[in-house]
Image (cartoon, rainbow, N blue to C red; front, side, top):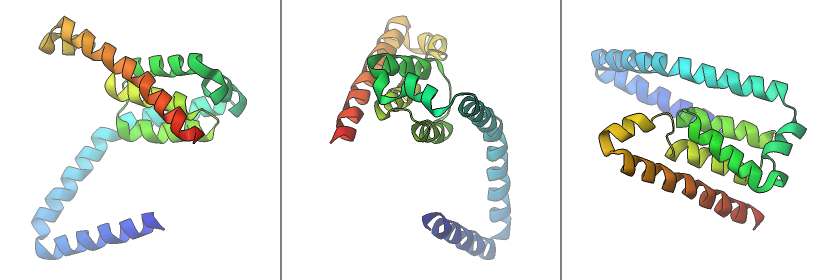
Length: 160
C-alpha cells in the first residue's frame, strides 16, 4: 500500500512539474533516464548473481554457511566477501533481504553489508594514492573490525 501511495505522489508531482514547465520536466526525465541506463548494468549483474546463487544453493546450504548456526566463521566469511565485493548500496540491500529470507542469519548479513559499505579492497589502490598507504590500510582495517561490532550488535538486538 505504501508503494502505491508513493507512486501516486510521484505521478502527481510529475504532472504538476509538467504543467509548470514542460521543458525542464522533459530535461529532468531525460537525465533520470540516462542515470537509470548507467545503473542498470550493475543492477542486472548483481541481480543475476543473487538469482543464480539462490537457484543453485538451497535454503539449507545458505543456512549452513550464513545462518545463525554458522557462528563466527559465517560472520568472518560474510565480512570477507563484503570487503572484496564492489556493489552499490541500492543493489546490496535487496540482495541482503533475499539472503535473509533464504535462511541467512542477521549477524552474518550485517557483517556482509557493513564491510561491503565501509571496506574497499578493490578500491584500496586508489585510496592509497590519495590518502597514503598507512592511512588507507588503517582506515580499512578499522572499518573491517567495525563490521564485527555491527554484526555483534545486530545479533544482540535480534535476540531481544
